[in-house]
Image 1: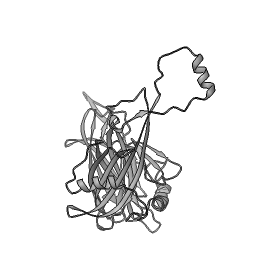
Image 2: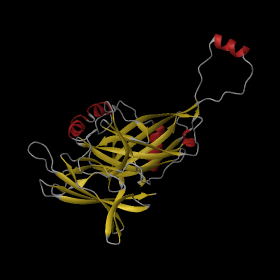
Image 3: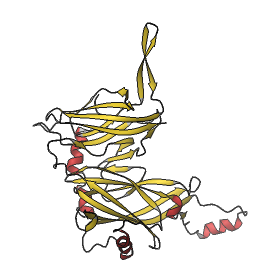
Image 4: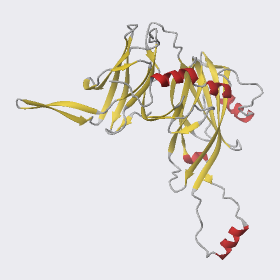
Length: 361
């Protein structure tokens, strides 16, 4: 089983590891202390962070939750992706302001017959997102590593707007290996409402275990696209995140229908390259339902440690009827399953097994 040829991996991997975040880090302050002259978090928000960071007690002026954290390599740092959910109504969507009418338009309106009030077709919200990252020292916040400000501006169609719907958003930033406490705030335009959450996360040092293999968090992807260039600043995205020149929509709930895209994405730490810089990695993929083997895929072979692998949710069954046998391919039935990945580095002899649970409905 070979890796995809559309985007990945040899040329793209080199691009990711050599170019990724060269512009980001310059534009956003290289991971470390923020520049003193740049006020990224106003005192009103800093005060709220200080009140809650010791106990990790959230402030719920604007309720939201941090639901997931992924990371992928980015030079000497880890590209940390944070997923959060917030209800539409809590973001304060309002009708978009309409442009002032011209004198000609006003005259037309006078002559036009009265009609029902026109409902604006778009709604918008203008908020602020602030991120403060402290080193975690034992169980207490240490020095501030970075402060990040992200404008949070959204538009929605009034016809499809659902005030009670909770939407998924992402934001990302590079940090060096270590243990951290993230303080995150969503604030109204005038800072009258400030909602906060606190989230502890750890980023591994790839060089800390040279005698073993490990991986970034393994996740499923719904869709992946190539962008023309990496983003030059921290952004907020709805339903997807970006990594170098990739736009990735992850299936963080790990729930599938038989027809859904079933693809894994991860990076392998600790593999040994050859003298030419190529790797010789093999990954065996198997799906289990409890202890029973449901699907065994042909092992994948990779020349880079970045692994995007499309699979499928189909079983090949042997049907016995009397003395006759035939094979039949069926969709994987509803239930809870485990994907097992047996990773082998053929150059160093190191191996590792990872598992990922998922559900088919």
